Length: 219
Ligand code: AMP
Image (cartoon, rainbow, N blue to C red; front, top):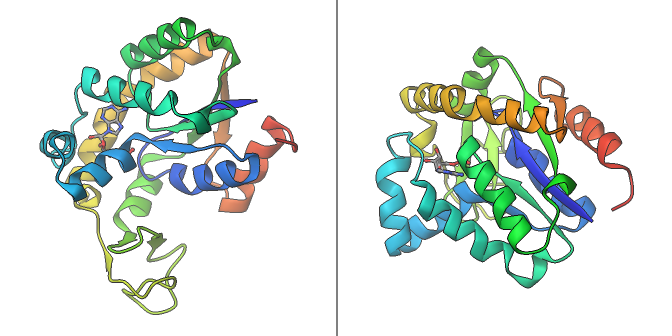
């Protein structure tokens, strides 16, 4: 049983590692950012609300975010484990998660928290080079993982776009929000003995290797 929380600042490569962990261990990848973006694309009330915060680089209010996550964790595919990406983002959300897990009969200490780290300058370069396919959502990077043809998705031929929240000013703001609000979360998990530090400056395979060594080879 793998119940994992993935932590790391914007641009550290969390999404890429999350996909790999999810494939290898057969657990759903639950990204709060992805769920918000899907709702924004569909124009749902949740999406409209979230858009106001996301485009300013601010966090969506806790009650909205937590409610959405509890609903997702109650789904059938989460019974055998799950990978949370982008949640919790604050100590308050982490405390709420612990309380929620207890309430549904899961031990909060069973969670493994992977903390992927990298210096700020590296993060800015990574985030501002990110491109996302407007049709299938696959992500690329102009330097690290470019598509075969510039601006075009290898998988579906869709146009590659910069996410509005990857613009330089927004990225800097998101890093500051991360520093202010999420860094204390790292201490919260460290002091409760659930944190494992991962070196995010390695190549993608190196980061994944370190994660697998920690989680164990077998699902
Ligand atoms: P991400 O793709 O994880 O970087 O998330 C994109 C944006 O969605 C963030 O900058 C926040 O505005 C919002 N968001 C994602 N997860 C959370 C969360 N746990 N709490 C509040 N806002 C969130």
